[in-house]
Structures are given as structure tokens and as C-alpha cells.
Amino acid sequence: MINVLFAAREERWPTYEATLKAAFRDKGLSVDLRRDFAPGDVDYIVYAPNGDVQDFTPYTRCKAVLNIWAGVEAIVGNATLTMPLTRMVDHGLTQSMTEWVVGHTLRHHLGMDRQILNQDGTWDPVIPPLAGDRRVTVLGVGKLGMACGRALAQLGFPVTGWSRTQKQDDLVHCLSGEAGLRQALATADILVLLLPKTPDTENVINAETLALMPKGAIIINPGRGPLIDDGALLAALDTGQIAHATLDVFRVEPLPGDHPFWSHPKVTVTPHIAAETRPKTASEVIAENVRRGEAGEPLLYLVDPETGY
Amino acid sequence: MINVLFAAREERWPTYEATLKAAFRDKGLSVDLRRDFAPGDVDYIVYAPNGDVQDFTPYTRCKAVLNIWAGVEAIVGNATLTMPLTRMVDHGLTQSMTEWVVGHTLRHHLGMDRQILNQDGTWDPVIPPLAGDRRVTVLGVGKLGMACGRALAQLGFPVTGWSRTQKQDDLVHCLSGEAGLRQALATADILVLLLPKTPDTENVINAETLALMPKGAIIINPGRGPLIDDGALLAALDTGQIAHATLDVFRVEPLPGDHPFWSHPKVTVTPHIAAETRPKTASEVIAENVRRGEAGEPLLYLVDPETGY
Image 1: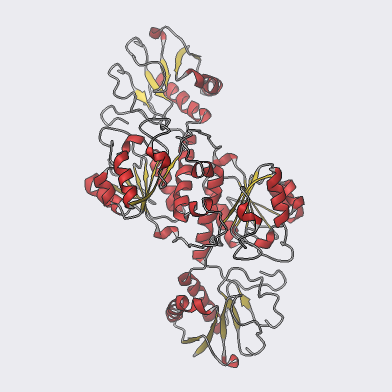
Image 2: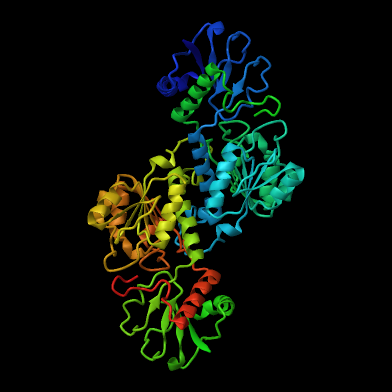
């Protein structure tokens, strides 16, 4: 019997209990899945960074911590975490992110807000350019970013992808490094932020990098709030350097009601809905990693403590 | 020398003159392109239904009328039109329509208006289903409809396409006939109208067909205004049978300022911007048809007067 502790928040238990049990069963694993064990009896921890476990020291037998979130920045620096940590790469989450990014890119490309916000009887046709004439840059072309970039390229957008390490793709023009970043920003009519949050990526969008973008560019951030220096973004919106920002993630969530993003006419706040882990597909990933752990095979989506993702 | 009369509206001449001449040159054709000829000297007419020529009788030598619009309903019934008529199938137009249809489908699928219209500081996450759980039906799977259907299917939507004659496609589930239409409507969480306007398709969306759709369905009409019985649609919006309609085309355009569509909270009017013929790509199609006409080859996109498209 394999003891698996469910250490995400209590309100997630009803959502995950049945799908996790089914996923373990489908892999032929004999698992005791519970919300409480003596720490020394736990083989694996199903984890979310906003759950209760912050000290991993008592979990002496634990073989791996399996995160159900894509983001791991709130746990990766935990000094008591001496066992392997995996992050979630969920098909449902990738799909959901792709739909949201493609949808909001097309919204800005087509200028939809003009009609959604102005149904006043004025017939005022403005024909947008074709997608082929609107350059999109995706900062961060890991699993999520590359899926979004490829979907946008398939619709006709010229897409540039930037990442710390050089990637290769047949649809997305890949850049890396400092010079690559400047080039990726200089051609970003629409910029999509999908970098992980690490010390290197915090405030990557600041006064200096905003000034490198084409005047009137659009920013879409479904990645992580701290990627953006909020004050620098507000200033760039006020000068018109940036025409609009659609933001799904924030330094503090829920975004406080008095934050200037809410009332700024050039900002759309969405309430962290771009990508949501889907219990069914996520449970399959967790179960596969428990199977691999038991078989001594390499775990999927293992986090590198050095890079932080 | 081949005499080609430009008979679209005068204001289109500056847009088309250079691109048409370049396209003829690229095909190796010696063409005299002008806005005035003695009618008996004209070999081909480049046409738009809102132009001046309505009586084709004096054009005794004319080998074909080459429409620069996709829609031909305003000319196909003209009794003086005894020469072949072609409609425009323009790559730019197909691309533009695909971007608009995919964009507005995702807008409704993701529930974007909720955020675009309500930036009041309320953090209210509503997670939409994945595209795989949102069924889209495209009525009319000709060149435009099929391109839209395939792009939506590539993003993960289950797409059904209906047309008068049965089509086949590897991504779009194709239906035809009366029973097929009922089935296509019954599974249309989002319905896209891209039928041509013919006597058979006028008011295809009426009280009876609206009642066949799932409660709370969305209608997107970038096709032709008369496909919809306006009064029946307004009634279905008021009962909630239809949750929202985004309409780009109307029986009268520009849509009069006092039309109830403008003020209805569940209707988005867009000013006929979904698909616009692009002069460069359209000129290439016109030139290719003049080349074919001169070489005695079959014309592209020939209109069948029986079916009306």
C-alpha cells in the first residue's frame, strides 16, 4: 500500500478525491489517499503552495512532492524541501491557456472592445490588418507558451518566442539571451507573458524594456504578476507607449478593489481565469508520477531547484 | 489588347488601379484597364453590385463579369446578365473572416464581455468549459465557412458544418438536408451563419429554427443580414432561448441608429467588418480569370445562376 497525503487546501478535496482515486486505480496502484497521516508514514505528497504543509522535515519517508499547480515559486525555495518536487503540466491547463491567449490576442487584434463598449448607433467601420501583419511575441516558450505561440502562428500571426534557453520550432521564431530579448520586444505588436516567476524574471517588464516595444503595443499577462513593474506599466499606458494591458495575474490576488488597474481605461483585469488545473487530467499526471516513483523511473516535470522551475 | 472596364464604385478606383495593373502584368496580359469604354468594346467587366452598371445589354462583346465581392445576390438575378459571372474568393477575405469568426467565438466561449464591461473591482472568477465541451455549428461550409470551421476545430471545438450539398472534411462533421439542419441546430451551443443569400436561405433563422437550438445558445452572423428573421431573434433573446447575438451584417446597412439591435443588451452590432476584400489578393484572382478567359480555360468561382452562388 502506497500512502499519499493530499495536502492541497481542504476545499479542493471533494473535487480531487474521486478523480485521483480513479487515476491511481487505472495505473494499477494500491494507494491509500488521505488528508491525514503520521508524517513519517507518507510516501508522496499531493501539494498546492497555498496548502497547510510548509515544513517538510517530518516527512522522512516521502519520495516526492507532486504539485497540482503549474507555478512552484512559493515552494521551490523552501529549505526543508529535500525530496524531488514536480510541477503540473496538465493538458487541460495548456488547452485552457491556449484558448484564453488566442482569444484575447484576437480581441485586441480585431479591436473588439470598440464595438463591445460602444453600441451607441454609430456605424464606424475600422478594418484591422490581417494577422500576417500583426507581430506577436511570447516571452517564455515552455510547454504553455509554445502551445500558445503555435496556435497563434497557425492562425496566421508571425510569432516570436523568447526563452532563457534557446528553443527550436517550425512555426515559432525562437530567440534567447539578452540581445534576443531586445529583438523580441522590438517586434512585439502584441506581447504575451508566460515566463515562470524566478529572481531573473521579476520585473522583466519595466520602464526600460517597455520603451523597447513598438509604440501602441498591447500587453497580455496570463503568466505571473511580478513579471511586471506595475508602476512602469501604468506610466507607459499614460504616455500611449502601451495601448492596452490585459492582466490575469497580480502581485496580490484577489487584486484589491482600490488598485489603479481596476479603474484605468486601458487595463482589463481578469480574475486569474486563463488557466485552471483540471482535476481529471491533473490526476492522471499525479498517478503517472507515483507509478514512476514506485518503478524507479524518472519523474515527469521535475523541478530544477537551480533554475526554479 | 484586352479591354477591361472597372465598374465598381468610383471611390474604389484609387485602391484597385495599381494592384490590378500589376496583377495583369504579372500574368503577362496586355490589358487596357479603364473606367470608361464604349460598351461594345469591353472584353471583361470588373464589377461590384453597388456600382453603376445595371444593364448589361450593350456589352455585346463582354466575355465575363468578374465580381470583386463574395456575395452576388444583387446581380445574379439580373435578366440582362447573359455572360458568365464569377464571384470573389479572396485569400485575404477568407483569412479576415476566419480571424473574425474565431475571435468572436472565443470571446463568447470565454465570457470576455463579463470583464470588458465590468471593471468595477469585483473579483469574480468564472471558469469556462474547455473548447472540447462547447459545440459549434457553422451553417454554410463553402470556402469561407469551411475555413472557419477547420480553424475552430484545430483549437479544440467540436464543429459541425451544414450545407445544401453534402461536404466531406477530416476536421468538420458535415451534414446536409432538412434532417441534417435540425441536427446541426440542436447541437449548436454557438451558431455561425455563413450561408449565401438565396431564396432558400432567407429567414433560415426564424422562430421555429431558433426553438431547435440549445437554450442559451449564441448566434454569430458574419454572412448575410436576411438569413435572420430580426423579430424572431429579438423575441428569442428576450426569453433567454438565445443568450447573445453578434451581428456583422444587416438587411439595411449602415444599420439605422434606431434599430432595436443597437440598444438590445444581448446584441453586439459590428459594422460589416468581418471580411473585406483585399485589393492585392483580389486583383490576383481577377487577373487569373482574365488569363483563363483568354486561354479558353474554365473560369474560377463561376456562379451557377440556378443555385444563385
